[in-house]
Picture 1 (cartoon, rainbow, N blue to C red):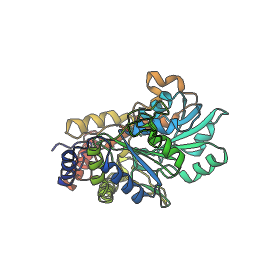
Picture 2 (picture 1 turned 30 degrees about the horizontal axis):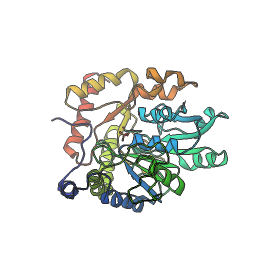
Picture 3 (picture 1 turned 45 degrees about the vertical axis):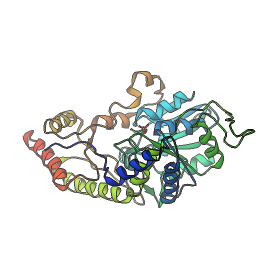
Picture 4 (picture 1 turned 180 degrees about the vertical axis):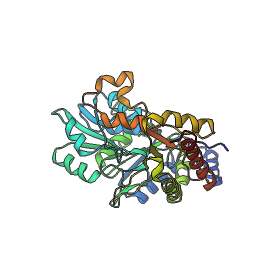
Length: 370
Ligand SMILES: Cc1ncc(COP(=O)(O)O)c(C=O)c1O
């Protein structure tokens, strides 16, 4: 048996819509973008959503929309995009440590990084579990610090009934490993009309569609990008989004099965923790094991055709070009990056496949007398 780390669920629904979009001859952003964005707003209670070519682009737009440069607090336990967006917009990332249990940035660690140059925080909702946005939002509002949510891994997850991406500017990813896919793609969400209008221009060459002296005029008002999502990819997203509840329920069912079996005391494995009032979208299913056996277990899984991985090892502050931004000690990030294992999870994963992973882990413990 061979088990991939993740596998997108694409069927005839997506093929039918993508084919319709291609046959329509409208190949850049078009009618399916509007449908996709409207459904996104409706499902998750956002005021404005803008489909674009990646979450990384959404993060850059969100950072640019701040309108000021300065220090931006981010976790080191994330994908490089979070730091790159900050640097590519001329600001400076400041790495904050995380909480061991939730693996998320928290207020205590944020406070340690605040200086008079802090302009914003990018929270990263790790693996599908939202950060504690209630206490973070309260603090940021009081101290005039803007919030950007790197929600790449957290489509459909809630904190006390509010979806991620509603507490600040939300940035979602539709890379094939994510909760829904458009192949490549992302979405920016905001409740602020000015941010919406600015980002709409920024992603399409800086053209202001409302300024037109002659019908052929294209008036550029700022140095924009081409970050648009094409119509046929939006068609895939629209079709995928209709199935998000089904996908996330399937992910949660698999996660529950893993947690039930792997949390048995003799394994000494920590399974994901979900605080009361939070929901998890399980874009990834991660466990932690003793640092002494982590690499050996990863290799054993690989030998048994199970595609496991370690998110995030190395953490960002260990990447050469980012080392200089480590100003504070990051002991939890360092510990977690050496203990974490990402196990396969995807909506169409069968019970048989889940048990094959569990049995293989069990075998590893037995063989090694652990
Ligand atoms: C936390 C986080 N941020 C950003 C990204 C980048 O997403 P994209 O590939 O859509 O730019 C990812 C995806 O890997 C991610 O996990």
